[in-house]
Length: 248
Image (cartoon, rainbow, N blue to C red):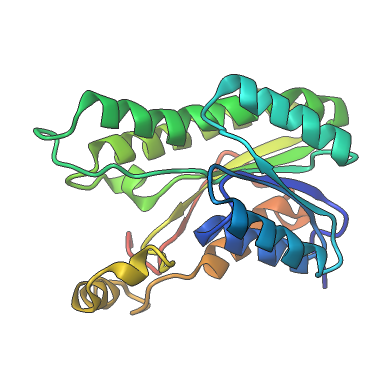
């Protein structure tokens, strides 16, 4: 059963990792995919080709969601290329971890800009389209770190906690127009980035999780499918932890 048949979806930061996993699972459910990348052009074009081969419409856009004007331009382009914008997934994000005593102002500002301001930029950009349609689903990628905090990640935690508050406020503002806004808070998700970590360290993290494994991009993608589809028609303003029970 295809839960997203003919829905048009924008995913930011989808050339690899969680974003790529979301794009692939959404295509399996029949969604047309517009996705962005910052610098990884070759992987982005490869993903575009793969998605097209799955029988859906797909297009990669080089765009920086942290830039207000670029976000506006992107949505205008997607609106021309696709008939509607049914779902927005704000997935783009970075980390610049350090202890508070060592973190630079620039590293703090950059993480807030890319992780949090991008969510404002993209949500504001699609708002007009979704208001005209009187429907839409916005899914913002937070983190368990935004829920509980983490030493050495004051900038990242602040950005991800901000996303939760932002999402709840958007849900309250736009609910009367049948526009829903929710957050997903992934826990330890194993991607190509974690492959470079020490295996003993990674295993110790797995052992501390009730389900005894790290999550996969597909685990996060499946939660996104629920929030993007009509299955969650009465769900808004919520934060869904996809963490294997880590915060239980």
